[in-house]
Length: 179
Ligand code: HEM
Ligand code: HEM
Image (cartoon, rainbow, N blue to C red; front, side, top):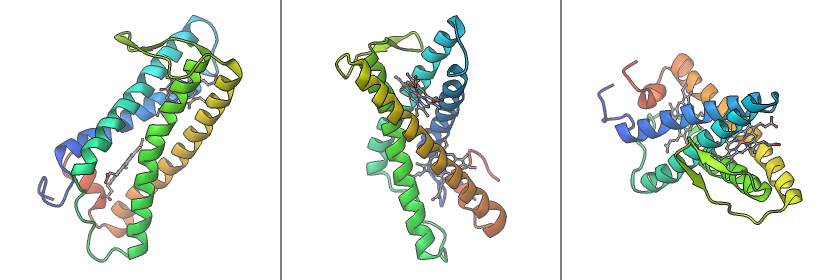
């Protein structure tokens, strides 16, 4: 498929694949850090928050950019309901990419733990100190993370279905190189 004709543009692909990298790092570090103790745990907490903050920043930029840049049209012949479901899943993904790190930030603020972003700068607290509220917000952070993981599983399943079953070039639209 020729670059930038029926595929996503280069900025759209860069946003997409940097987000994938950030989310994979945030989820893996999040699960690992909850099962460790000591100084390594605290290092992983810092890294987890850093990758989470990266996802939040990328998503804010990406949504701003996306408002002015429509995606390329889907292949003709795709059933209308599949088109609608894909729109719904994409916007739900955007929502959760925003809400999940925001809840992590708010929960950590209420706990009054510092949020260092890759040792470069600190994110300011956005909620007053309140340990009970922190517990609630981090519980919601965990639920949002589960919903995000479920949608990502559906999304990747759909991309693979398009590529291997329908063979309609949908995966190639977002893939970083020609496939
Ligand atoms: C898309 C971004 C993020 C994802 C996918 C994510 C994912 C996760 C995961 C998988 C866990 C482990 C949950 C568990 O095993 O119970 C977790 C926990 C946690 N996350 Fe995140 N996270 C993100 C962003 C952030 C951000 C930006 C912060 C803070 C600035 C943060 C703070 C925390 C904290 C403090 C915990 C521990 C919660 C607890 O003690 O119950 N997360 N996150
Ligand atoms: C963390 C994991 C992922 C997230 C959060 C994510 C998120 C998104 C979002 C929000 C869009 C919509 C772009 C737009 O039109 O505005 C999208 C499109 C797309 N993604 Fe992902 N994605 C992830 C992983 C993947 C993976 C692993 C694949 C490939 C196996 C993939 C393949 C695609 C494709 C092919 C499209 C374009 C769909 C179309 O043409 O309508 N994504 N993704």
